[in-house]
Image (cartoon, rainbow, N blue to C red):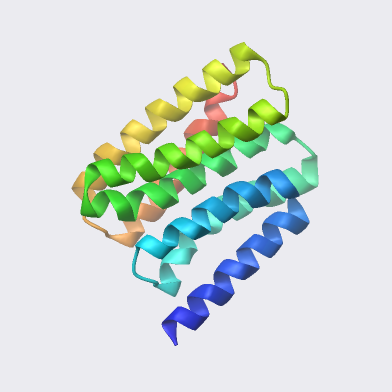
Length: 161
């Protein structure tokens, strides 16, 4: 039953990403959802997607495309944390895949070199912080929720650079 609820919630998340954000937001969301095949399905864990949904909603209300970055970094943290609980390098691979997907989309959107460099630098710092914290939290979802929210807020702050 947990697996069914988990899949249903994942599908609802992707539907929201498509409806509120469109194809780029859905693509990043899909990579995050597919990564969940490598962790135990726990519907409660999907509460960690709330910060990403908040950025989606804010984008829909404001039309500010820059909010794609905090959305993507919330998802990178969401992916990294359970993988890093197994092995730090797995969390790095998962988060790196998320950042790579984000940057690929940004390249397809014809973002400038300076913008891409700043986004990559900020993403690398955030991912390093997430992985450092992941080694200390040991899978406690309340702390993971704070880490996901903080990662997205740091990405939002990084937009000022």
